[in-house]
Amino acid sequence: MCHTANGPSTCTLDVEHTRLGERSGYYATPNNGDLRWMIWGTCYSVDTLPGEQWGQTLARGPDAVMGYRGLSADSSYTDEVAEDFAEEAWGANDTIKASWFYAVEDWWIDDVGSLIVPSRVVGGTGADAMSARDNLKRTWARRAATQDAAFLASAFHSG
Amino acid sequence: MNPKIPTTVVNLFLALALAACSAAPEPGRTAAVLETPAWSGTTLQRDARGAQAFESIRDQQRAATSVAPIRMAVYALEPSTVAALRAEARAQHHLSFAAFRAANHGERRTATAGNREFIANQLSGAERFVDRALFHHGREGAELAEAVYLDRARAYVDQTELSASDGRSALYPYKFRRYRSAVQAIDSSGRPTAAAVEGTDQIAVAFAQEIDGIPVIGSGGKIAVHLSLAGDVVSHEASIRRTAEAVAEVDLLGANDAAAEAWRRVVERGIEPRQYVLVRSEFGYLRLGRSSIQTVIAPHYAFVFEPLEGVVGRRIFEVVPAVTDTATLALLAEDARAEAARKAAFGSAEEDERP
Image: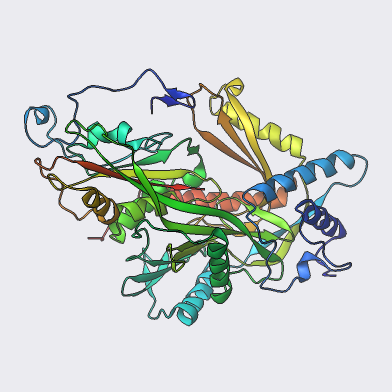
């Protein structure tokens, strides 16, 4: 996503007043914000500094961003990641985090899945963000318009 | 000596076993008569076995231009429904599951016990155990030594009889993963105000299968055991199938010819070859992943390409059958058709009844 092996490319989006998934206020005028979860099936999409990468997007609005750390594969062996994620998050009602890590797990292809989730309590703590990251399910109510994040919690795997 | 295993295959096994620095078999003893549970090596191999097998094959082919080509067996896999039934029986015996029921329109059989679930895939023969209250619910904390996790995962594989146990297969330690989590504060505009604080909250150990001393490459032929930081198993997933009878003995395609075919496919994707570099070459028996249909297992070459620095692109995997005879290629094509039909059916499945 606008990123090459040696750093950010030229198509970076860095607009202070851009928001995704906004529900009220003037941001919501052009798009009233049904967006809750994003899966970026491409390289560097939730990369090594996910807070810097997604902080402004997640400060208000969306519930989670899932993607890959580093280079990911274009392969028929990983073309069912989205299906596997849906089966776990929707079919088995498992958490968004567990579903994403299960879906991307292919030990031979070795893609590194990652995700980032905002805290959901106004004035919340790091523990609130971590709880949201580890327990968020598709059945949870979406964030209220007033639930601005104070912390971000992320996860990935090494090795 | 097993009459189904030709001398050339035995020689190949010996060469690869030596190349992999594992203990040489006793004289007159072949991989085909190893008793189970069979473990091959105690240290993490990652993808080195496949790379060593590739180099060994390429070197033998270079040295054997004036003699008969290298030949290898192609095996039928035990039917996936039998593998799933076997998984079900082990789940009942070792993990105390009962009352399996059909799910996903008969594609799977599942059993639940509280937060614990066991799933046996009827199409692929793969299996998964998961404790949904514990899987990726761990808290960051102190880790045990890596060797402790390896030992516990291996003991679990033995206790639950997860190895293929077909007399030809062995397992070796493959990869080790730490699941890392982090938290950081942001200001009102979403900018981080401090560096993220990281920790480990779950561990996973993977084992890989080899057949006749040849590594199984691809997404399948793996067992992954997920452990809590305390070393308790919270999930496993296995895509190991027993081999059945040899259905063919085939001449191997040359490694250089296979590499040329892989590059041809890269170009066919519309990629400028000068922008990509070959980073990995492997040889082994190919197994597909957790959901895939596969009835035979045959030797393949695998090639991994990555974009050069400054080039926007993804990692590319190309897999080329190391088989030259048309009858075996037809068997592989039949599997490929069945697998393509399975994937195509996903989008047209009957209306979802899930809540």
